[in-house]
Image: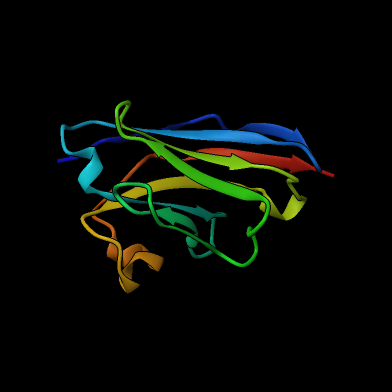
Length: 125
C-alpha cells in the first residue's frame, strides 16, 4: 500500500511558475515509476508527465514539453513537478500516481495502482 499526498497548488498569473510536490509513504519508493495527470471536473484525466523509478527517464505530454519538468528525490520519497510559463489552459486539478514499472500503460490512468487526492492549479490571464 502506498499513500500519495500532493501539495504546492495555487493561483498564479499567466507566465508564472509553480512547483508541485508529491510525497509518498513506504520504503520502496524508488521501485515505483511516477506520473502526474491533470483533470477538470467532467473531463478525462490526462497524462502530463512521468518518471522512471531511478529518475533516469522522463516523459512529457506534447502540451507541456519545454515548460514543465519532473524530478524525484528518492531519499525524500518525493516527486516534483516544476511548471514554468504557465498558461490559463494549464488550470486543472493535478494528481500524482505510481505504478511498479514504466511501460506503454503508464500514459493511461488505468495503468496506475495508487493516486493522490489532487491539488488545484489556477492560472489567471
